[in-house]
Length: 364
Image (cartoon, rainbow, N blue to C red; front, side, top):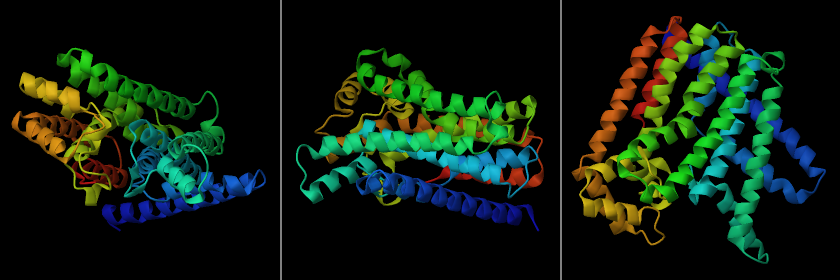
């Protein structure tokens, strides 16, 4: 069997295992919640719907970190760890959509929008939007709790004081800090020094997304398999720039992506007021008048299609899009160069190369 064939086979088996584990875990939680009240069924239903789809990037990074450090395929511990990461990702998405006021996720309504629609369909009293936000916050909190419960099921490999437990704890804390930096920049960015906008956006990317998308999951899998500190360092040299390139690609798609492919409205990041690296370059390279317009219109409730089109033109004409693409290419090169230095067997190396190529060249 070639390395490519083995990667395909192992990934399919692992993804199937994670899907089955999630289904069983959430079924048990549904039975438990039913003893509280049948009215709480939509909480678990929303979580189940969210973890059914997605690229499984974090779980797969964890798996190949495990395999690269000598872990065996089919071990139930790594499947359980993948399940915990998927639940954590779902919790982050639920809260992120509330923060960003994003009504869509993967081509359908986001969780808070689903609850708002439930309010409307039943003709309930008071404000449907407020109910949707409150219910989604609780759903995200519940999902976060489930993630911890699932990771604890790994057992001694994830016990207090282990390297794996430390990585899991740091990952969760950093995401919350990164989320705060993100919302802070939305309100403080317009009155801060524009010259620092790219660096601030880079920091947000690192802590809100890159570390928990690639670096921590890869290290987590390695730690669970008993990887030495040197291998974990090598993992980080590859996975951190990859995660930053991955998020910058996401930010480009958030402005220039095809809604049919991304599952998000055109220019969604502009409507949400996200101050990304792309926006930072535009603020620094556009004319003074154009930069003032960007500052004023980002996140504006009346931002229309013509405004989105104008901002896109500014980003292209001032060179912000090219600068972002160059940064993505630079980070990608760093990642692939570090990948070739990883002391791994052919199968995990092939798998990580495939994941990296998909992460930086994707259209959705």
